Amino acid sequence: MATLTTIAVADNGQTTDTTPLYRGGFGFPANAGGLLTFEVFAVRSDGASKGWTFQALVKRGSSGEATVAESIPGNLNVFASVGDSVLLASVTAEVDADEDQLRVKCTGQASQTIQWSVRISGRTLEL
Image (cartoon, rainbow, N blue to C red; front, side, top):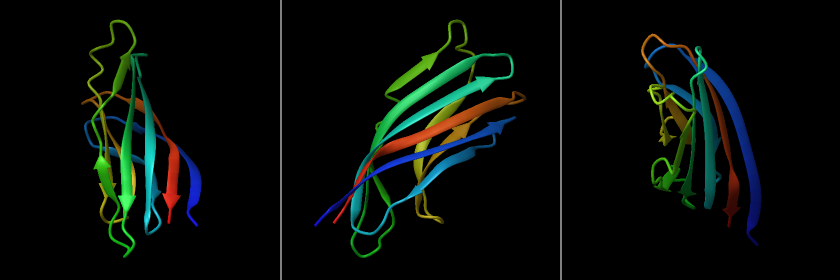
């Protein structure tokens, strides 16, 4: 019998330069897959803001292989407040090979303080 699990991971943090910030680590059990939705929101110290939403199909094999992101199509939706296209921040989802977790990589802007909020939600199915 397969086990269906609903997940939600929320995390936040801050960048003050272009050093990446990793948030929202989520590990998969063996022999499982899932469709996850990522919501990321960033606010710079001057109030400029930007948001991203995207989805990824993720799996982990039955022999305990590493978690694999089958499909990360990039940013599906990017939102920015009017006049704030100068918020030069970026977001990607990736698998952390050392921790075997899916996480979000937030890259800030040089000499700018940016507050980040990350939410990963979705469903996983374990056989």
